[in-house]
Image (cartoon, rainbow, N blue to C red; front, side, top):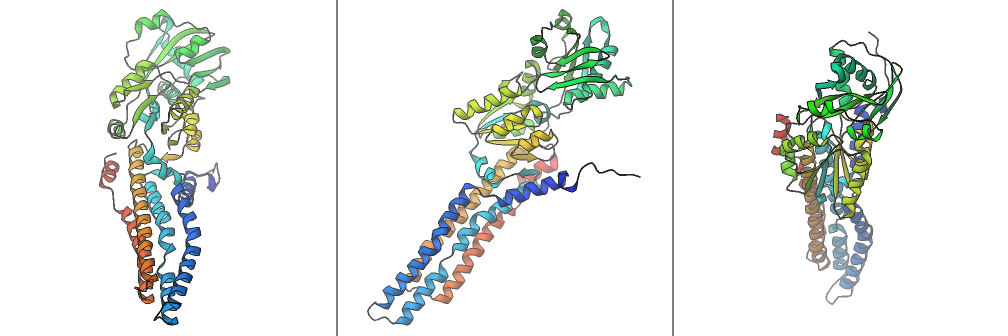
Length: 433
């Protein structure tokens, strides 16, 4: 048995997952940077308070130098920048680890902080809301030449990575069709593919793209379109329409429940390059009311920017090269791990596996994490606000100050560890998917 490695260790998916988790745990969200600025002045301020305490007690009536020294030491010992410093990174470390265990790879810690603020969610259809495994369910070709038409279409589509193209190639393979070699192959994301097959120019794509090249859709197609809600690719040979291919794809089992859950957070849109019938059918199945069909990659990008200009915080969820620009431009982009490599690079969060509910889970984990961080910061600030005056006024022994200081750090870490308690809602979803 001979095994050939096509890439080095650093390029494997496992290595990229590990690198993503490490990056998320090392990058600082805005709240951590703010705490760092506070901690930067905290120590000098505490030293100043200790000096003032010493001077005040040293020159106070009926006081001796021992009291001044003891109370100044108590101030230094009880003041705890550790609690402030630990409040954010420990919670963030545990939150990102929980996300990774749930199949949610967050590339940077700042996205954990931003997720609860999102109020608009844009979903691609094929491979995101649907299984991404469309099946060829019908075809229409002039003169009834389905065998020849499918062979020509598969000869061109075999070079494309699009799910519809793969469905055509799979059907041809199942029928044991002998495919020809295509030359001058070109793919236009969101539109179609073109190339030379058996010495003739072929185009396969959506109706808008073929029409833009002066190719008229035959009346035969209009009369025989009886597959409701199917995605359609039109086939042209030598700039003449010769047929159409019909595809259907199942929506994911958790798509409807995920959409229903996200609706409580903000607006939901479906953006797809598919035709209007297929888009509306899929949208109705999952419960999305706002639908944009026949969209090119640049149109998806434009919509993201328009929503952002209107003050919306936009999440884009997609898996294909058609979604890359929108994923990069959105406030937070979710890329499906089984999708296109470019989409995964452009996304800010990568969802491992096919669970669409991981989008809602990511928001839930980020909310828990940020709530935990706020609790830690509140405790650290309240602790210092109470203990430092007590020490300055001579009401705290230095030995007790040491105990309280250590206890404050332990309490912050202990509160962060509460995040590790299993979220039963998420665990149930993982078991049923």
